[in-house]
Length: 406
Image (cartoon, rainbow, N blue to C red; front, side, top):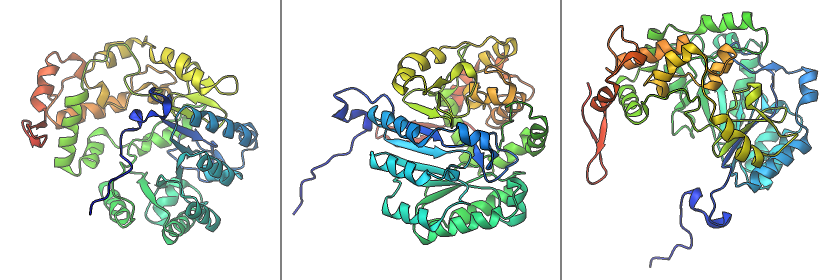
């Protein structure tokens, strides 16, 4: 005998607990600290774990709870705690418990070196409801610590992973293996495939960003050495050739267009927010241009979402090189260039990023959108080229059919 279900599943936007209005905020990222116990060569945010000035200026537990409470009242369902290394906070367990107690699903981004039996017991007793994300810097001590630059960090990483496995705490792993290479990625993927919860592959970090916070010339020189030339990077990213080509073509078919001078062509600041360790609300966690951040010590998330973020999203580019190239480039959505990455790389939100531009051109040539020597911002017949590459269509039954392209 069939029993009638007393519940139905539907998109969160259709839930009526907000009296017919869509929730203002669905997701919140919270950077609990900029400090980290590793010193990764590629990282754009890590301050020393013992940095007392940074620690003194971090949000208090009271301020964090206040922000989480407001986020929940705006309809937020998910919070991601990141850093730096969020587990460096002495009050992390209290922060975590509060977030779960008010009904938030919690994701944690960590290097796993500070995972303890106490934490795994807490995660068992009160599950985060989102998989923990563990950053992986190498599959052996030498490669791992050449990136983390902290002796003993590989053993601590392994100990944390083992605790999560032993106590059945769901987690996924994301690779940041430098210098990047096919063999390193294959080794990581073979290891990650044995993690019970790795049902969806997480894209590896292959293109580290520069660090433009104050004087960072030495650090940036190290990062540039780790960057593969665009053609070599393409060879790594396209190692699953057919799948890669199909994904690129589908993306271009849906998103390629001339953006014009408007800077924000993404969903930054729309239904989500990002709070840094000192209480600044940002459209994106890496966008820290002083004109684009909103202090929650002087205002509210609601005010930022309604009055501040919309104004920022209307900003127009003024840099001549950006207007000549990026603003006229039909591949703009495929490129890593965005106000946040531009800020990290050039200290401008409308800078032209040569490295990522060259890689995007290499991708476009790989799938037949550009010919050798062509520049994307000079292509006139781009609409026809994109149309001819359309990789999939739906038949009358909704099934996906492979068509066109090479």
